Length: 302
Image 1 (cartoon, rainbow, N blue to C red):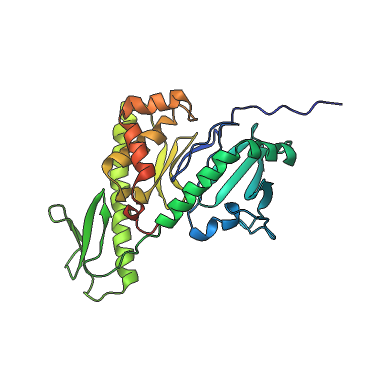
Image 2: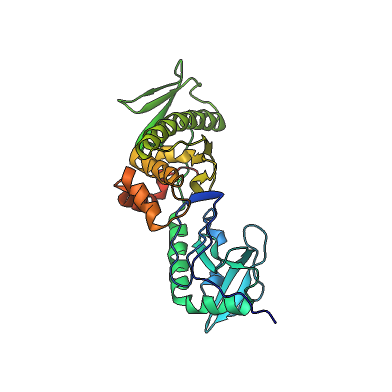
């Protein structure tokens, strides 16, 4: 009989698209992770995933799939299992809980043995994410005259009743040609449109600057409204950047730009990839840290 394939410890790379996830956690140990983040929601992290006791009915994951349940001593762990053509077992923990991505030929027993080996790390990260989710109860922007929100890392206020759309850099006031008692949705739409226009302009300028530094050419770029990714780069040179980065300081924008452009040289996250990022953006470690730890209230509507 043919022998079953032996799992490898290195994760397969996706050469079609490399993403920079929102608030992702690196995974170490059994295998390099296939990291993917999903929108954080207090309801998404089931208490049963953290509490002792036997779960009766496993809840559904955000995508509608049924979660699997594993008893680990006195604790019950729920996880989502994805099958793929990758060559290793990957762990990803985010606001939705634990996701395991495994080769189609790996048995459930082998998967759950791997989980058991990593259980201390898994429960620790789940608790961290639960705390993060609870702290990410964002105060909503009140879309009215005088509304405040961040633009390039600094507060910006909205003023209604202007004759034309204009932004005053000195006072950091965005004037809108809307009546003082305009509908909140109208105000939000007009501000969002302006922010996306700024994102298109500024991100495009930064891409040109850093592409020249690296000596690469990107095929095209566009804005993304993804709730799980700051940016992505395909092997064909198509780059997409999350327009909400416009809320962050320019250094954070530059980091994401440099990160995605570096994928045109290295379609992975290997040491050579990070050396490439560092060659054009030496401060990437601090910017990466800030992006992960940035106060979530700086990202309205996330």
